[in-house]
Amino acid sequence: MKIITDFLIVGSGIAGLSYALKVAEHGRVAIVTKREVSTTATSLAQGGIAAVSSDLDSFEQHFDDTMTAGVQLPNPEIVRMVVEMGPRAIEDLINWGVNFSRNKNAAYDLTREGGHSQRRIYHAKDETGKEIERALVTAVRSHPNITLYENHIAVDLITEAKMTRRRLKPDRCLGVYVLNRETGEVETFGATITALATGGAGKVYLYTCNPDVATGDGIAMAYRAGATIANMEFMQFHPTTLYHPHAKSFLISEAVRGEGAILRRRNGTAFMDGKHPLKDLAPRDIVARAIDNEMKVHGDDFVCLDITHKDSAYIKDRFPHIYETCLSYGIDMTVEPIPVVPAAHYLCGGIKVDPFGETDINNLFAIGEVSCTGLHGANRLASNSLLEGVVFAERAAQKSLERTKSKPAPFPAIAQWDSGSARNSDEEVIVAHNWDEIRRCMWNYVGIVRSDKRLVRALRRVQMIQEEISDYYWDFYITSDLVELRNIATVAELIIRCGLKRKESRGLHYTIDYPVTDDVHWKRDTLIRKVF
Ligand code: SIN
Image (cartoon, rainbow, N blue to C red):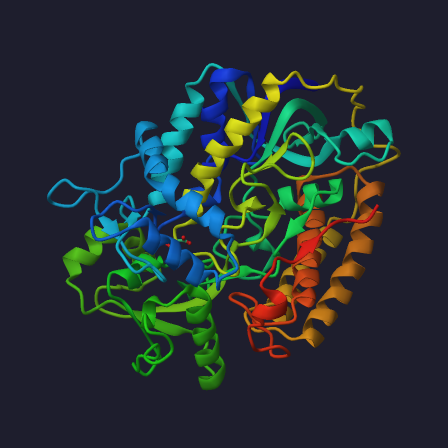
């Protein structure tokens, strides 16, 4: 089956859907998404979206907070641009139907999270992402130019170099091969413009608060196609996810600390005093490392997050989702502290893009968590990611429209996917085993505190697994699990290789071999590109 469209979007979180709504006035849009449309990291976002609006706040302060959290690695021009486009992004979301929480004076209720010097976070109680996703999906579903393909997982990019077997610099993207999970058929989607909005890669780690779909598909596909990938060592671990055997790393929003919660040892001692002037609201890398250290030093499996000093009615009203979820696991956060541990949460690196979200493959854009725009540097400031998604959707839409207007060169013939002599697999256990091994290896060797020895060990393991996957990949019909496995292996390799390149500690990359930040040699991105 072959589908031809003007704009092809892979992924259906805030970035992909905002971009779809922006370009849909100008052509046909196809969105492919690997599960149901709302199975996205956006839907799980609790905290909110940062943008300057109060008189006490300023673009300068939001800029400074972003640069400080990112340990001066963010690109100042990008930070300035995103921060200044913040109010407009909020306006777009409100126009698309998002209902942000208001206070008793009917003004928008602004909350605070780690690293922010002001209250500037718009939220919808503690389910901001769910509300955003609801509004965007409603708008997308009712747009006549947009077709949604659910249960379709992208397999590989189609590029001009691949189709014509020529070396092209730059190459051009012509679309994507996509596996229809219901029929098992690989379909060809040809598109003038392709936008990857596949989100992050938390599933590379054993413990993550990301949804199951976060397997780094866009990054792995772009890397295989020859795009430059940047800063993969900067995986952000969220300091506080619920510690419970059945909770699957449920997120306890940083907004809980923003509203006064305190981190304590199991014996009740608060431990963030003296670690950073913002104490419990220090940037995430600092809090996650402090928790990791507390757990190691005291041999504890978790630390405690305590908001019991706040009024119980207030807690239930402000954090209804977190309150109910904790209660379903037998924890009443109004009267007892919540046991928490860090878990993989957000990838600050990704596909390197220009200020308009375009990659170094022509007509291929990357927006949202899949991209590395220069906004986050070595550590993302909380609630800057939803903002980045909307701002870069707008920027990418602008450039995409220019490209479609300037009469693109004709496409070469696009070959259908060739399964060769593949057959049905009789050993699914290999896929399951390798998934588990990669995730465990990454958690143990490439976690919050790293060393060269552990990174090298991890690289050896991952490369061995990759060889096995490669043999398996071409022998058997591909399945969604196999596509994702190949992708998490690639992303794991990229994280480790970037980690080995950076000979310093900065933000989310902390290594005992180079514990100091080295601004002279390392105030720059780590870049990786596949050699053909
Ligand atoms: C949270 O609610 O703590 C997550 C917000 C974010 O990661 O920006």
